[in-house]
Length: 629
Image (tube, rainbow, N blue to C red; front, top):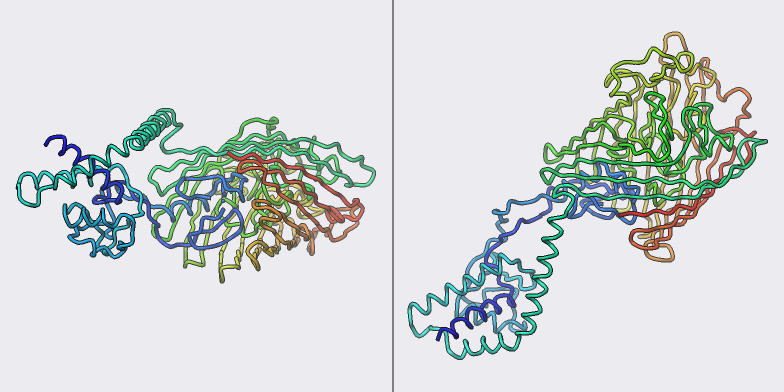
């Protein structure tokens, strides 16, 4: 009799497993949190709780941060973190939603999703009506296709064993029939090979899991990275300049994302690059073309993945060596209410918090130029310097599922206790941006992001900023330095910047996107009366999965920042320039070699570079290879 009882126990457990018995919900459960707006920074899509593809912006699903095929700039930011905390809310291991609580059933007909034609119907009927060890959900469903956990299996087996013990103890006519025990024993014998194989696989998985747990980097931190290696060549530039040599450049980023509560996110980013430039632009492609500003290497010929101040710590004008490791991002994001999220950090960029809207953004995957990536208003005051220049704090407030407001305050010199008395140039100290959190160069910026329809995304930007020196801080044109032309470099300036970005997906794989921007610059000195207005615009077509799944392409055209007006002692163009409207034409195609490797050939052409018709038409060609992990 004892062997039959053993056969009964194991056989019952096997049938419970086949039938998907789930009497207990014992594991932590992840469920969708509030239905707030989730903005996809990686491809510009602005949508509700969608996980398509943010800056370490790039997409978050059931992990803190993952590298996404359509956005691998690896610039993890606030938007990614907001998506993370809005989409996922870990439940307590001891809690279970009310809809998942189980109730005992006495007849298989009580289960609305179990039909007589189901392959396991007879097994379920026997377990329910003869042995009474099957439980269903309150909504009268059984969910037979649902995966079972080890805890649930143990609970189901225990329920059946207890029922068998009850039957044996009562010794009534309902005692387990000998025929059933023989059938179960026969099943066990017939499936011995399969059960042995399954046990072996489970043991192997458990051993592998134990090894991974013992050697994992951290239980709270995940690592992802991006490596860009690119060949860059250019022709044209200033007249009488020799064509520059083809150069080979790289940028490497490692991003650590840590969550302490399951809703917050600490982002730590390290990077190294071999671009050169320094205080005078020495060694940069822009200088070799004769298009760079006398200070720094600001130019319209800059590539998308090049830092704004290569080879230079702009806070102290100290040099940064090629491939020196730098902390380019340090940011903490945490929700404080159902619709409100706060963020703060000592190394952050505007694009970390503000959705970029345009699908051309993606320093490692999409547009190959600095012009094509973002609206210039996002770049004001070094807002996207590529080196996490500013210390910043701000908030994200979800007004409605299709509307949110984001704002921040940033200081680009928060780590300096005071401004240096030493002068690098007349009126310009060796700490040209000033010193202190609330003194010196700073910015207040906001973005209202709106999605009036599933295929239309709109972002409206405003920034109010102050600079200790005569500079825009965008790194987009040579006129960025000496923004008020004809005014001393040490003259402080105030900027009021307005911009808008729109993306319309008129087909599933084709999007029309563009932006417009106006920057109003005024001298912030009682002794100087000067003002200048800069304008810029761009429009382009973005193609997704062109010719092959995973391959993207873009064609865009526009006007780089250009002085459209000047007043007081400011000039419309520097002395010696032949003023002309500049234009930018660009095309690129990204080949997806594998999930982790892509190659992007492309080129952009500059007409009247830097707004000066004395400069020759300039062509910059790029062959960019991006590795993500």
